Structure formats: C-alpha cells, structure tokens
Length: 111
Image 1 (cartoon, one colour):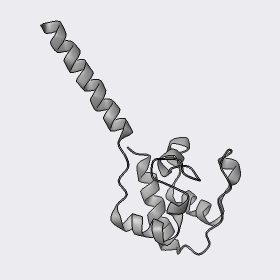
Image 2 (cartoon, rainbow, N blue to C red):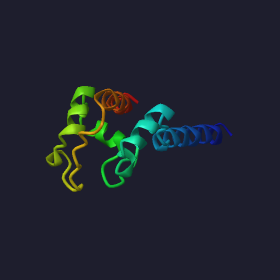
Image 3 (cartoon, rainbow, N blue to C red):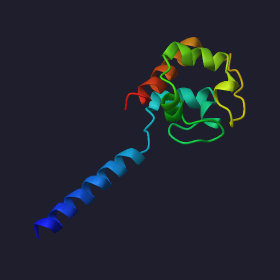
Image 4 (cartoon, rainbow, N blue to C red):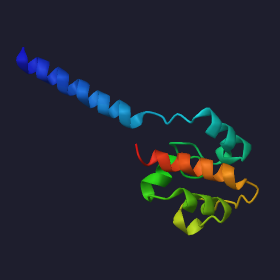
C-alpha cells in the first residue's frame, strides 16, 4: 500500500508540474486592449506561435529589457527570428503604450 501511495503522489506531482508548464498566459485587460489597438495580436499570441513568435518565446530566447523591445517595435530585426516572416515596423504605436506593452512582455520572462 505504501508503494502505491508513493506512486500516486509522484504521478500527482508530475501532473501538477505538467499542467503548470502548459498553462496559458493570461493577458491583463489593459495590455490586451493596447495589443489589439496597435494590431500586435494579428501576428502574436502570448504563449504560442502565430505569424510571429509568442511573447513568452521572445523572452525565452533572450532576456530583453523593456527599452530594447520598444526599439524592436519601431525597428524590427528580422535576423533575430529566422524562420519567421519579417515584422513590419510599427511607428504609429505611441511610445508610452509601446513601453507598457514591453514591460508586460519582459514580465513573462520572470515566470
């Protein structure tokens, strides 16, 4: 019985870790509104590849600072993401909105 209990506990722990690893990223409402307004969600999702990489993947590849992400919004570097279509520059995104989005993206790397 002890062995069965240990196996059950181990299986439960594996399931919990697996579930946590596969949990979807919840986008805060204010950030989602900015991502929608600035057409970011047309090509990006928080945690999955769409046309471009998911924001979580961006932070897994390199630990960007918010200012670096803002610069990439205005001046994308396609060489950073081979295998993806080049991102169009988005000069119409207001700087304060770009920085707010960038800070949220950076927060995904801390989880």
